Each structure stands twice: as C-alpha cells, then as structure tokens.
Length: 346
Image (tube, rainbow, N blue to C red; front, side, top):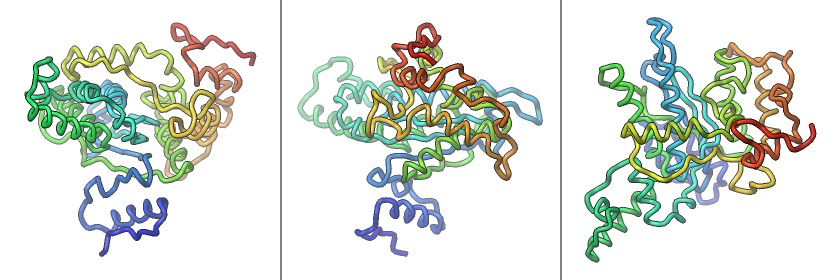
C-alpha cells in the first residue's frame, strides 16, 4: 500500500487519509505519522488504565479508594501545559481513564529564548553535565557552546511534541501509583490514543464530549459539579490557589525541579480580549450553553444526562450572559478572593 499522500489532497481529506491508513495498518504506526501539525494542531487524546481497573477512583470490588490519583493527573497535566507549548482546551479525569483536548503550538516554542527552553526542560529533567554547567554560570568552550545549542534545539522540539508531553504525564503517574501500591508493572493499558480534530465542529464536539464524560457515566448530575473536568476548572479558574499549592507540593516532593514558570489558564474562548488562533472558536457563554444543552440529550448506551427540569447553566451559576462574558475573558478584574464581583447588571 502506497502511504504517500497525493500532493493535491486537501488538509481535511489528509486527516481522513491518515485515519484510514491507521485503521488498515496491521501494526501500530509511529505517532509522527498520526500527528500532523500542518493539517490540524488540535487533538483528542485518551489514556486508559491497565485492564480498565478502577486505579484512579473507587475500586468496586475491593472498596479501596484511589480517588486522590485523579488529582495527581489533573495537577500534572496543568503544570505540563504550562511548561510545554501545548495548550489545554478540555480535559476529564475519570476513574479508569482520562481525556484531553489539546492544541499543539510549535510556533510558541520557536519564540522562546534558549534560557527559557532550558528552564522549562530542567523543571522535568536534570539534563547532561554540559547543560548543568551552563545553567550554573560556568564558561564553555566554542565546541561546547555548539553542542549546547544542538541540545537546546532538541529540547525545543520535544517541548512542542505530543508524545513527549504524554510521556512526561503518564510515566511519573505510573511510578507514583506503583510506589503507593508497593508493586511494579504497567499502570497504563497501552500507549495513548490520539484523534485529529480537523474542523471547528469536530473540535467543539470533542470538547463537549470530554466535559460531559462524568454526566454520561452518572457520577455527576450537572457539568459544573463534574469534578476533575475542564468545565468545572473554567468556572473556578480565577482562584488558582489550589493549582499553585499543587505546584509547590510537586516541587517539594521532587516531582518537579525548581522553575519560575507560572501555571497558565486553560486555552481561552473567543472574546473581546482573545482573537484568532489564540482563542477557541466560540464564546464562553455559547460553549456553556452547548455543553448544557448537549448534556440534556439522551444517548443510546449512556446511562446519564442532565435533567431537563433544571434551569439553564448560567441561571444555576447565578449570572447572566452579559455578566459572564466579561468575567470569563478578564477575570482578574472581576474576581476577588474567589468571589465574582458582578459589574454588569443582570
């Protein structure tokens, strides 16, 4: 089978081509053949625990509680999205798997200084002796400087690579869980799955699907009460105390090395302060209503949905669309000590 894409194929059709090739191939394909930035920067990612066991929630057989591990995953994915040039659009951490919707932004990494690249990489890995000497302020020979620049180029590419992002997410979680259980072996079932999102419609559908996972599994009754999801995090986004505390905890435990990189928010929605490629192609109010409306629909094979008797989501949150939009796009001006200061009339 000739796997070369014809030169006249459109970006959308090339995504379909890659998907068909992956389905027809007898062996798993390298991730570089499944992820193509020139076609789409958006991807839906899924990683599942081994044997689909409840290794991140409450084990129904033994009754043992692993719920705190969901927090490990949420905290680490937020930290990594701040270190990598990968924006986090949506996520949901379930009992035995998690979903991510991400945007790969290699252009962002291309504009980082060499020192910025090294600081981000050194937050995760010690690096070779040459890198350590440079960061300690020791002088290097011209040959060593050339080697250092080549090393930085490798790090820059890795910090915008989905496979490295997932490696830095899954491997530490597996080691930490195995250490807690006093065992060895696989924690994750297999390598992660990635799905290209080639259109705005596919992107928004994937985000809504991810945010509604707890609803469909009947472990939450409304999206805003769905723990360990991006929608709940967006509603509470202005109060970053918990994430900052998590970052400091990871630094103290040695899971992260020293870094001055701040936790950055989830990828913003389209609004007055965010335009074009720096924002998701929908306003926050419209997305909330999209998720809420979708969650009320019954789906074959899915146990849960949002009750149709409930008020719309903005009414449940106690805000109007006129109040929510400026608060969500410029939250620093509208929140204080975790509370929303409503500057617009309802």
